[in-house]
Image (cartoon, rainbow, N blue to C red; front, side, top):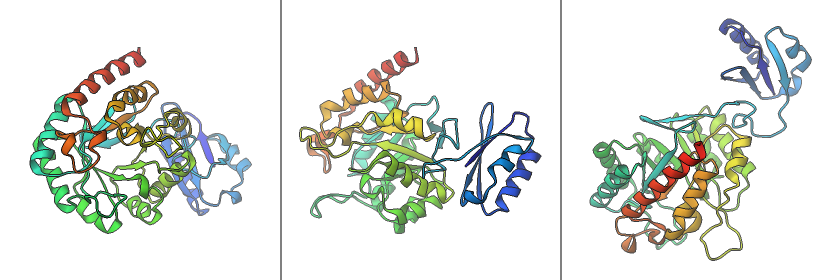
Length: 334
């Protein structure tokens, strides 16, 4: 349920209303927009007298929300959320680009790539320290040592870092990580999501291989229900019957999610296609359809990468993609 308040409602009136609603055992989420303030109610709203609530002097209208996701719902929060990450942001009018190697392999490697992607215009450095792999015999990442190397690169370049968590027990290692990524395979690891909901760090939540948008938003709800509203959604391709690409990139997810939720939505064309030469056209398409950013894998020597070299761009190719994306963004704004 949401209550839209009238313009001119004072902070004291808002606090009195919130206290009254909390006394009825409800969680209250307040979203102040440019023209209206929206009060979202989560809990057993069946016992709330909607007519009584709507009759209050400061209340403009009351609506019940049928969707099971509440905090992530745009009806709760009409304005786009802007997620702060260090000195940059994701969402609103800021187009974020997270770039770097699929897997951190060495200090020399991550430093070289970090400097290259920053020079090309990336706003964050992505890199895998813990790597979920289909085969137990594949490289699993440098783990804690990988995070230390990412932090060194952050100190050298100033780029905030994004890296994936596999287990809630690893959270202490992520204390200085700027954005914690939840991979596709962990999208419905609800116990992990609950733990991340108790943090105040931005969480990059990737869509699962075979999950619907509703399921993605319900996973976001797990994080937000714990108190952490700093969630960034990522479409990274879903599994279909197509075999020429690694996955099938669902670009329709971008406008659909923007309609359903206030959370920013980014695209990962690297994992979506699995083919380096397809990353550029899909990145351009993502920019054209309104995505709030990109996550792109970049490696200084893709042929010898320990993980996903086939989908990784060289620094020079990434720089070319960034220039083209910039032109698309300018065209869309015009």
